[in-house]
Length: 96
Image (cartoon, rainbow, N blue to C red; front, side, top):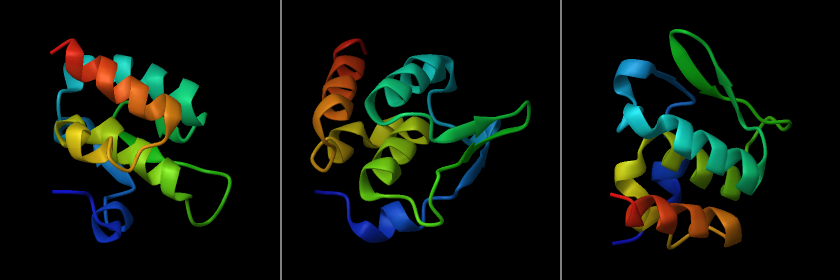
């Protein structure tokens, strides 16, 4: 099963820390996303929020954002991820 555009487009743009999957490894994903696609998020004590230069994030930014907050979708997201992000997802999954 692959990821459809609807899931990416309707993924919340602001997520409370309590709602992030595998929050214990968030820093690993955060670093990988920054390397793969650049800084696309703001982090506060209460939440993490998608923040891009454009009003509408690009597809690769949405894939990275979704993986950041929902790493349990990694295997599905890697099918639509590009280059470095795909490699980061693979490395993350290998460390499970």
